[in-house]
Length: 245
Ligand SMILES: [Zn+2]
Image (cartoon, rainbow, N blue to C red; front, top):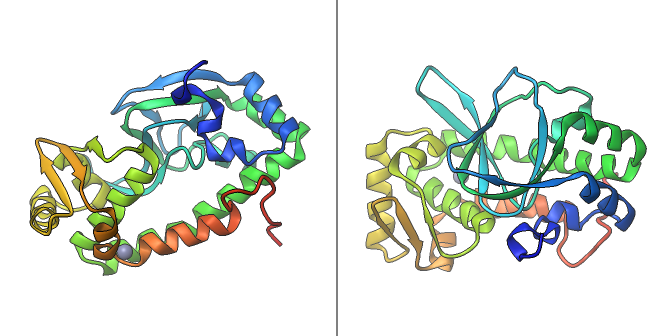
């Protein structure tokens, strides 16, 4: 692993680990490429691996009546897929689908569970991340129910950029509709509005974020709330996050 895209330092959860736990974890991980559309877990099925994304991102979704599904969370280089392994179960709670391809570090579910037994501080950190996900779930639920599609689209685009990096990425109408739980026509209208306001440029699935500050203004307050919750537990610039208690 030589470049930044495949370096453990690209994952903020790994970076936040104490040195001993970080070294033990990284020694067991293997770098893998994640292709857009890959399904990494299905609800109710055993998880075989845990993933620490380094680039791109994965959406966690709850399948509804086929082919509908609703995205309820996004996992990128701020976290991990498979945090529920820390609860002692290997059953996946949600479908995990790669939304934007990239790279990740991967280790076997049983390997991670053995490490969690041996390294209490690793377990604490993953529990902390689970806590963040738990606090974010009701924000996503309320957002989906109460906020306008345009606000939600702005929110998801900001979350996507935070994880995928850069100002441009590929997201089709269909994948945006899945993420927002709306019809494609709703996405077209909302994206058209953001485009007319000069906040994005969107053509043939390529989205360019033109005005991040403007998008933050167009988003519902959920984006700020999601960031606030995560930064309380994983403050930037500190290697030792504050205790949960
Ligand atoms: Zn919202």
